[in-house]
Length: 281
Image 1 (spheres, rainbow, N blue to C red):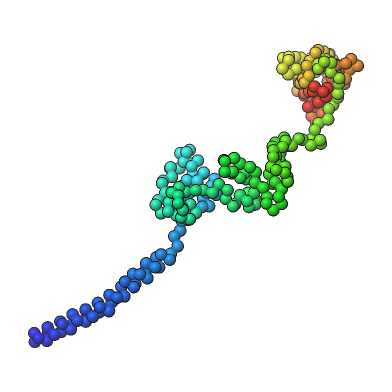
Image 2: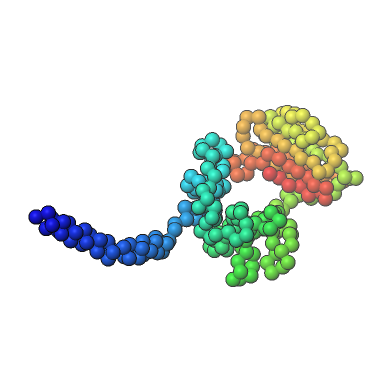
């Protein structure tokens, strides 16, 4: 009886050992296949390059642990966000945009991303130069600068060498003088005539304090050096029409005030330039 029990135990033990011998060679192969499968899974970069390109650079807050972009830095400086944590070793290895840095330990952000050369950014953004300066973006298709030109500002000459020029106002934008007089040694005498029934307050800018000219009266301002500006207004709040007329006497100008029928006719200032041109505003 004991011999039969020992024999059965030996058979069971032999079966277990045989199963192990068959299974052991398959374990390393399964582990190798699992390792290959894990390596084939692409790693997702938590700090993509788009976070550091416009418009996301100034509109999107980067996740915690990523190098801060412009918006993140500004909000953190204002106390609206906690300071961005240092990037992890994995983020440092991947770098911004998922590319592994070559021969450098610092993360480089492209100052001139391709999005700046694509509409609508190529006509509204400035391009950052290597020396830190900026210049308006231009279109490579037409070869003509797409920067918006403002009269009086520095603009780029289309087809030129990108030299700054001053764009003068167009002739149609220049106001024609209301009158022209011949100055006497650069000076002018102005006779103000108030034909209204209301008092008129007038002032020579930089020369006299505000003064009152009663209705139906006149006053003469002598030897005013051009350029000179005179302001005037009715004390009752009404509008004035202003009529400048050169006098027969050299270097003299007569200015008459009358009641205006509507606000568009109203004038409140007169300027005489060095060349004798008289402008009303």
